[in-house]
Image 1: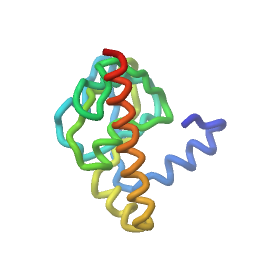
Image 2: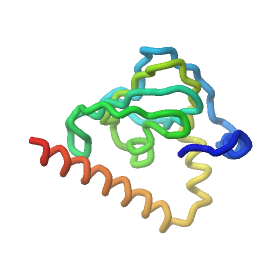
Image 3: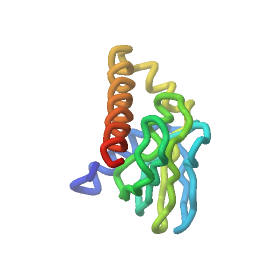
Image 4: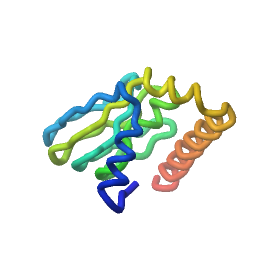
Amino acid sequence: MSFRNRWIEETFLASLPKDTITETWDPGYETVLMDSDSPAMFYLERGKVQVILHSSPGCNDGTPIIVEAGQFVGEMGFLQGTKRCATVKALSRCIIRMIPESAIKEIVAQVPFWFAVLVDNLIDRVRNDNAIIREAKK
């Protein structure tokens, strides 16, 4: 997601859950490590990270993906309660909003159940598509 102006971005950031934690990641910092639990997801407010998807069911083939400000990382495993299938490495100084499980539970409780199922299905579809792409590259 890319914001066209600062006001829209500030409004978006203000709408994040109150118990969001702001962190600074220096270049080279690694987190959201492969096979770790998923107790939070991260919104990249400033900076650039490299996401290295590891070869495992529903993951890619180890090809790095660059994620820039305005996007989330760690959201798929977090939202599905599964182990991480990627490692995230800061490429520049980053300002991150860590959104813990407690904050998301509060939001999900307000969302219609059908929408939560839809998000879960979409994540499954992305994981399946990643597996198909990985197999096609072999």
